[in-house]
Length: 246
Ligand code: FPP
Image (tube, rainbow, N blue to C red; front, side):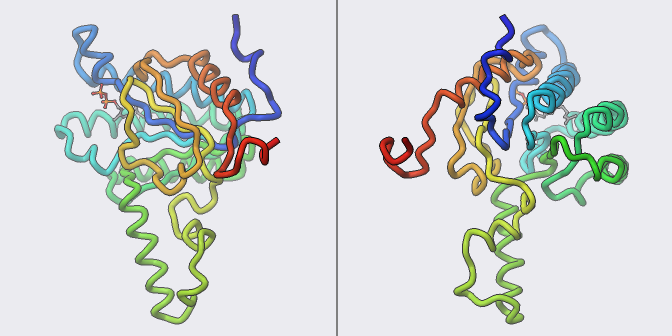
């Protein structure tokens, strides 16, 4: 049965974030190199992006490369960068057809210039699309993002642009890479790991967490719908009592 029919369109998460994990183990299970896992991972990226747009998700953020991933063997980093470039080239038409805007968060200047160029091209060509914002977290680390926000805010305080008393959640939000995105409602992590791994620490304060054993290259449209249905069955209390919510 298609789980899509069980989704309540009036209670969709506004923002889904995904830690795509398990490419390496998926490849190893079939006696292949890790690169094969990443290659197949891009197929799951493609179906997940299209499925989210199709059902009306407004924001999807994918953890594609963390600040810590730079410590992987050079050959693997190179493979990931090549896959990023080729996927961007290949998917531009799909993004346009589905009215999806591409956005990035992270320390993009650290990426090879060829990847930066390709990203800027797709960001620019999709900038007027409005159906969904797809954000790729690239060379992203949440602690680094918070440090950078603290530096920007303190510098404004020093220059009397804002007062210390004015610092509130809205000011912090405005200085994060995610400044134009709403908080995450649903965070999905594949591959059976139960960790956040330095991803959107501030933005997931009230997110519902969903962990699945499925390895990322095996993650299908139906797995995405399972996660959304699980989200819709939960009561989000935001610190209030159950009675207050009703
Ligand atoms: C985690 O699997 C996955 C990554 C570090 C990278 C995710 C990248 C892709 C899905 C492909 C390229 C992305 C885009 C946006 C085109 P892992 O290598 O940590 O797996 P393991 O834990 O089993 O070793």
